Structure formats: C-alpha cells, structure tokens
Image 1 (tube, rainbow, N blue to C red):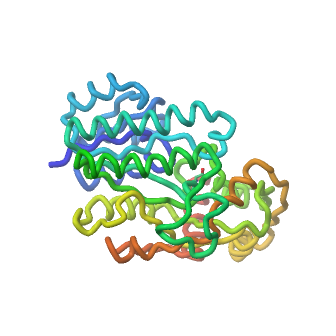
Image 2: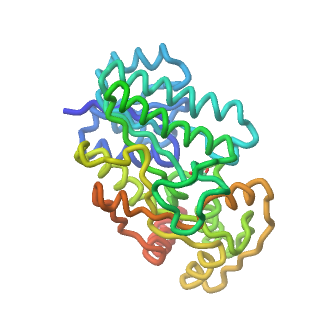
Length: 316
Ligand code: SER
C-alpha cells in the first residue's frame, strides 16, 4: 500500500487531490500537510494532517520517517503575481522547498510529483500551439523557479534514479478553494462575481488568451501521470497539458449564456498583464496525449456549466 505525503494540502490543487487520493488509496495512507491549519472539516477529519514547512528540512525528515512515506505530491508553492512582489520568498519556497522534497525523495526512495506551469515559458517562446520542447526564457520569478524545478527534477531522475514526474499546468479553474496570488485567478473570480453581482471587473485585457483547465481534469492529469508506466515517460519533467484556451471576453460570453445580464468591464493591472503576455496563448499537449494517454473531459462549455451549477449550490 502506498504512503502518500501531500505538501500545500490546503492550497487550490492540494485541497482537492487530498480528498480524491484518500478515496483511492485509503484515508490513513494520505498525509496532508501545510503551513496553515485546515478550516475545511472534510480535509481535517478525513485522514492524518501535519503542520509542515517545506523550507524546514529537519521537519520534513521527521514526517517522512514517522509515516514511512513512499510517494510525494509536492504542491506547496508561491504563485506568479505574489512571486513578483516577493521574489525572495518565491525563490525560498519554490526552489528551496522543491530541493528539500527532492532530497527527501532521494533518501527515502519515493516517487515524486511537482506541478510546473505555463509560467515556465517566456516572451521568446512561440505563443500559439506552444511545443513541448521549445525556447524557455521565463522573466518572472515564478517562471524561473518552475523551469529550474523541471531541470532539477530531471537531474534527480538521471543522477539518482528518483522517479520524478511533472506537468505544466495552465490556469486551473475550481470552486472549492481559491487560487490566491496567480495571474490566471480571474477565471475563478469571474464566476463568483457573476453569480453574486452579475458583473466583474477584469484585471487582464479582453483579448488576452491563456490556456485553462477545470480542476477535475487537473486531478485526473496528476493521477494518470503518477500511475503511468515509467518507461514510456520520455518528457517526464514536465508535460504540456491543456483543456481549453480563451480570452476574458470569450469566457464572459459563455457565462452570459447562463446569466444573460452579466457584464464585464476592464481595469488592467500592468503587472499581471505583463506576466500573462509572456505566457502562451495555447499549448500543444500531444506528448502527454501520446506518452500517457492524457485527455481532458471538460471543454469550455462543460466547465462553465458545471462551475455555475456548483457555485450556486455552494453559496445558497
Ligand atoms: N495559475 C498560475 C498563476 O497564475 C500559473 O501556473 O500563477
């Protein structure tokens, strides 16, 4: 039986994979950790929870030994917009934390996943149908840590045989937990504001295209990749994965099919707009499709419909 450690378990992805992994592998086999205590009762009471700061290597060792961990989902990270205001902290958490977890994976012979991002690309990357292997010169601290993280994960695989795996997630859309401090957060906020107030002021330009994915597909990508046959993973750190790409204007039009009175206006934040301008308009994820059968279930229409139904239930 697997013994799984999740870091950043209270974050946007962590909170959802904790629940799913506990269902698949058994509640007592999935140890959720974070630097915050969970307020979500389901997360707190459905299995072991530990306070864990990923920049503290001694504490990591204690938790690894206590639970005899063999699989790590390292989700703790600082997102792109916060990374630009606090680059030192972003480096410390994203790089220092990843180094510590890779060292733990090496020492305790674990399989390990860490999420890379569309943020690993930069302004000189081809923006449309961005290839798996291409120019990568990110200009944000977040992007620098994600690209360095991909290289470091490959290094641990080649040098020490650690079974590292990763995907370049696009913007992730979910209704359970807010992302917080990212550039793609508008695609979550817009739903809550549309349902509560029928209006939203967007901090990105109306025509700014970015890759996106609904959270159930992100969870599926993560689990499918971790279950895939290791010998087939030629591009293991990290795979382009996407499900859809749209602009704020296109998303607003899709929301209007459900909430006809919805209005969007724009007040562009130059920092987040510059970050978004340096990321792809749409990625080519054919390597993931051919090497481990990646295929999303939700397109734009299905995602928008489900988000609206679920948020209405949630805030009733
Ligand atoms: N969603 C992330 C961000 O906007 C990108 O990986 O920072």
